[in-house]
Amino acid sequence: MTHEQPLSANLYGLDRWGKGLLSALPNGDVALCDPAHPDAPPISLPEIMQDLQQRGIASPLVLRVKSFLEAEIRTLNEGFAEAIQRTGYRAPYRGVFPIKVNQQAQVVDRIVEFGRQYDYGLEAGSKPELVIALAHRLSRDALIVCNGVKDAEFIRLAILSRRLGFNTVIVLESPKEAEIVIEVARELGMDPLLGVRVKLTNQISGKWESSSGDRSAFGMNTDQLMRVVDRLRDEGLLHCLKLQHSHLGSQVPDVNDVRRAATEACRYFTELTGEGVPLTHLDLGGGLGVDYTGEKRASENSINYSMAEYATAVVETVAYAMDEAEVDHPVLVTESGRAVSATSSMLIFDVLESTLYDAPDAPDVQPDDHHLLADLAAVSGYLVADRVQECWNDARFYRDELRALFRRGYVDLRQMARAERIYLNLMARIKDIARTAEANSELDKELQKIADVYHCNFSVFQSLPDVWAIDQLHPIVPLQMLGQEPDRRAVLSDITCDSDGKLDQFILDGEIAPSLPVHSLPEDRPYYLGVFFVGAYQETLGDLHNLFGDTNVVTIDLRPDGGFDLLHEQEGDTIAEVLSYVEYDPADCLAAFRKMVDEAISAGGLKASDRKTLIGAYRDSMNGYTYFE
Image 1: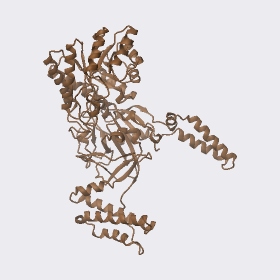
Image 2: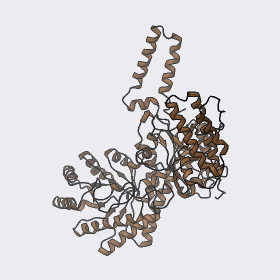
Image 3: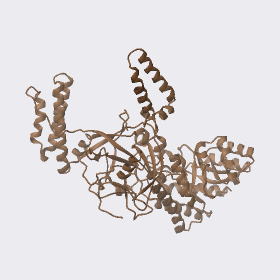
Image 4: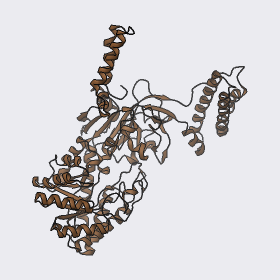
């Protein structure tokens, strides 16, 4: 379904990074598009939010879209199937989803449900994740790949699970771990299904380059690898070693890095086969990236390939290497988590208020005001397009001089207030002129630094931890009014009392900007912002800074008629729940507060009739949402 793009849709780059999952409606609303039904009418996100609000589900919230998750699983598996058929590759693809990327039950359950038709499995990097994996009915040929450090209990459960028909592969990370496996297998009298993790020397580029190469945290070097192979042979367990694992790296930006790393992995595979190791599976780990910015190039937040191109690169590289070495084609395994789950979730929050760094009018200069204040006001008299840079320079100079005089006691508080208001009014006029005048890139950059602050109902630390910790970029877009030209620029501040709780890097059409074009806040309805592609890592990495808990979470499915079905709602944390996370007993807190109220009544400082009101307010807060209501 096509329609004319609203005025500012291109500014936010929806068509560049949105993967066809998002569009802008003629009324300016951002809408969700059903990838399984391209002809279905897009569904307005503001209308979805209005519907959820009527159901009592408040923002901030994480909105998961089942249709988007299914689309990525379909694209990945069918991409490999098509590459296999096109190249004549003689083994299938068996992908696994790394549970660590998003451990939420609603996500993992739906991945397993939809992935069953593709024999799609799971990767577990810890005992809790293995417990999750074993609670799902996977298809007969699906894999459970066990990575990470494993103790005897982990290994025992993995081996025993084979009695239920699970293809649970224990990937050996070190010679010591191999000894634990040998001991547990001997104790159980069962053969394990084994893999071995090999460190590749090839190092990828990008933000996560340290997760690849021979200095990466997990896996074995060549010497350790051969010691493990010899040890398994001595114990009569070499026949159990079926899978070779190598992690190419995380969010690999350049597809040629994928080819180079896969080529090196194949060298190990063919050499191990020559050593008599009966390998049948080649696991190339993670690395399939997400184009967060829409740049479509090899950069930290983008990639220069599609899922189909990634699949082709892997299949062709492995096929060529195996044919050259005259080795049977192995079953191909990848552990693509970010690319599968990132696009399926978005964080939506409302703007509570704004701090504007300009003013619509200016006060008159008083007769006894300092002459610099009059000089500042006089800038207005020559503020025209040809002199806008000069006026910008003069306004800042006079404002800074007045601030210095105020600090030394030569200008009083009311004069300083008038000066700030005059300065902010000049800024408003300079912004208006700069918006319509000939491009002045240096002035534009300076003006972006004095952007407004939009105070938003969310926590960066809880919902977008990678933005704070590693400067991860996510697309951020106003969900309404795209039919109107944005008249302001802002940075987004969360409701934590922390100066780091802000968003000040934004993906715009053709640039990464320090402020986001936004609209003046409407008075009659909420102004929503959406942060997209947050389905990977963000939900489980969040912390409790200022004790802001998990947001509400809603899972929906898109209908072909342009509506949606609410599949699941997970209420966000209450204050009582958050307090329990940090070792407080909510009942003890209430009892302590009640005791102080009763003591105040006994001391005469409080009326007995106030007791119910005070305790009721405390109890209501305890049971309330941690965010602004």
